[in-house]
Amino acid sequence: MTGQKRTLFLLLALASAGVLISGFIAAMGPVLRTGANDFAAFYAGATLAGSGRIYDVEPQYALQKQQFGAYMPAVTFIRLPFYGSEQESDRAVGVTEVGVLSSR
Image (cartoon, rainbow, N blue to C red; front, side):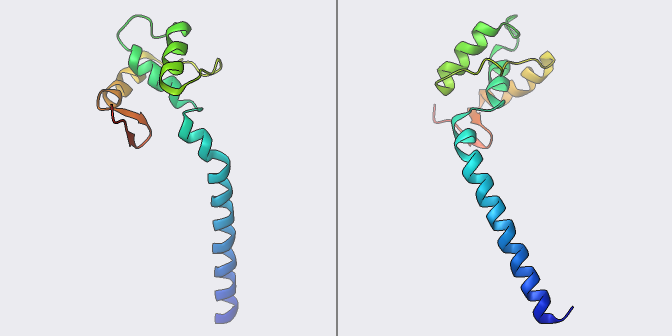
């Protein structure tokens, strides 16, 4: 492959990657920002860890609605309890979204 062809190939590959990444951000950005994903279940599990109600859906839905403005019936905490306890330390320091600290 000549130098000119290699440069053209590299530019096309970078442009294609840019288009794919931009499309992903455009499609998933609102979902990730509003909490409309499975993070809401982990947040509820962390909040309810140790309460004895970690698998009750009503408190989970109430927490999701309080924190994210809506609840998603298909998104409930179903993992083993230690996952909730593990996430509890994140919640204690104010992590409400992956990589974002709450101002509360």
